[in-house]
Length: 132
Image 1 (tube, rainbow, N blue to C red):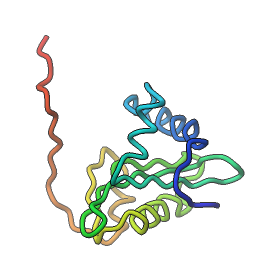
Image 2 (image 1 turned 45 degrees about the vertical axis):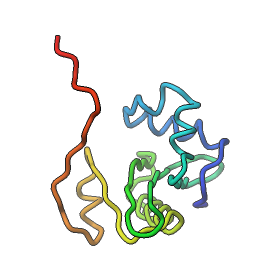
Image 3 (image 1 turned 90 degrees about the vertical axis):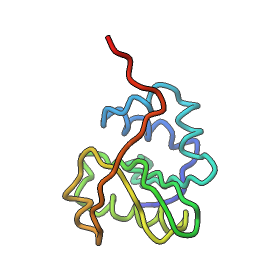
Image 4 (image 1 turned 180 degrees about the vertical axis):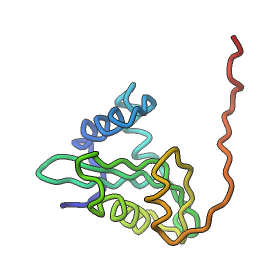
C-alpha cells in the first residue's frame, strides 16, 4: 500500500469513491473537485494499492494548531484494514496542526477509536433553503 499526496491521475479514483458514498458535490464537476482537493491550505492524501485508489483523506489546516478533516473515504472492500487511520495520520502529518476537528454523517465507531473529546458542532450554510 502506498500513501502519498494526490496527483491529477488519482482524480477518477477519488470521484468513484465519492460516487460510491453518494457525495454529488464531488462528482458533478471534475475541475471543481480537483480545485477543492488541492486548494491552498488543503492536503489530500491517497492510499493506492495495485494502481487503484482505495482511499483518500482531505485535510484543511492552518499548518500550526488547527486542522479539519473535510473528507475521508475508503473503498468498502478495503475497510477495517487500518487504511482510514493511516490516511488521517498522513494527512495531519503533512498539513500540520495538533488536533483535528470534523463533522460526521457516519463512521462514529471509527472516529471514537481515536483519542478524542466529543464537542457539539454546527454546519452553517450561507443561503437559507428555498421554501416550496
